[in-house]
Length: 317
Length: 317
Image (tube, rainbow over all chains, first blue to last red; front, side, top):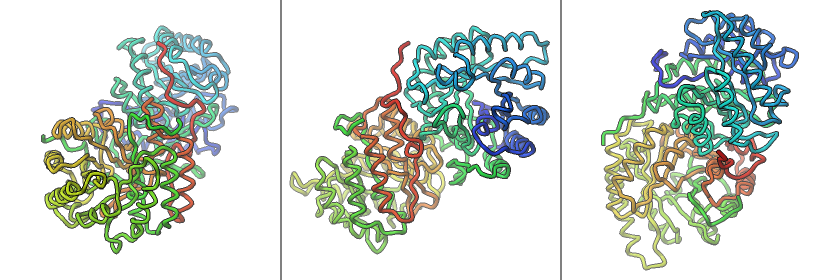
């Protein structure tokens, strides 16, 4: 239960990016940094600290360089940022971000709304970012994640063709990404679909490329979807402390899987996250101090930790 | 999506019992009946309509005979009631209840708090109730469910011995119950534990005895636990419309799995519940009218149904 480097799964906190992009109020730079520091201290191995998007489009991330700089001072933390295009990647690289995540919508309609490009044009952008990575000297290279979004459906387009998911996943793998993430941007995914699509993607890209899961809890199925993905071999999951999250260009998208509920589930299952749940719950208070108008959610925080800690009792039968 | 008798799983609404036993306000008899009628019209095959407990202990159920009488007029609905002991069973039988559920706590501490008996003494009570059933003429017989509670842990006692769960399950099977239910009364269960315990119980009692699952969403793991139990062979699940639920004698116990979120999950997975989700969501309004001080929860109701209905798209790859 104490923070540790021994992990069976990695939980990546994406609240400072996914959680804030949809919030009207500007969260002060100091508050963002305090939040990131509190979660890193609780044992989060990776935090997506913001987005290198045009600050006129999303003013929330106008201070991204300062936030990255502070996060990079935290020992052992992987500092990730979203980049919408090559230009953002160049800015992120200049700041020394460890990992860049490029969103690639499977839904053509969401892709236009989100990055004003077709999915295929966004794959071209991915290739350019991989080229940027490969041109850097050792020690300054960043990792590249392709964040496939609207994988399980899209409020703008409707159903999403699973063949198109596979085609884009393979294109990203061939472009040379370091890992791939499958996102249920609008909360339509169900566990059967998650199993089917995740297995098909892993089969298509091969075992050498890690596949992560990014689920929203819009309709309450977030943890069930995580469980299904875990059982298909996914070992990295995005989540948001206090259930923040949403997409400004995907109508109806709401809260991500709740970091503390997710960490609790794995902890009870005997699957090591490296996270100290008490310190993680304490980090909610740090987050809440920086948010004036936004309500945190989550079940664990409301109910508290059970008095018997750690994994459920091992079978004696 | 329309109400139907073709079902792969049965969802049993337990709100009128589990949801109301913990609520201070008395819900008017007419409101209880309207709620039951609305859910039956949405396609719920079974509703636990209340408890034949001493009304001085829980005044909420003082009108149980009247509620049962109204519920029995609904064509095709299985009308279930909780009975704490033989005396309650005799009252329930006199009212013509179709199915009686006797709670048997695996935790000795919870058993004392809940029914003032040891688990073993409650198994004796179960035998007496089965004897009552078997003494009735055909056509007046009720079914008997043993509701094993605190199966996955207990706020009063702490960890619960899984060997004791199996021992009690086998004792209930040998007593002649019609089915068995495994309840996570206080919301400590995790999916790995659910898989392990459910499998062990099914193995121990044999394939002829149906095993149901009763999960609370206290720490957000409710649907993940349902998924795990489903995949181990459980085909009947309790749930509460609007996330009501709790136990007056189990500190910290809170809301059951949310009926509409659960039905949505199965529906998306292509697992037939027979429930019309639009009518089920409409039943929330009927329920809400009868509750003055109690807040309904649930994700589906907040987010709404996705615009693409039915199961997630079938794989085309």
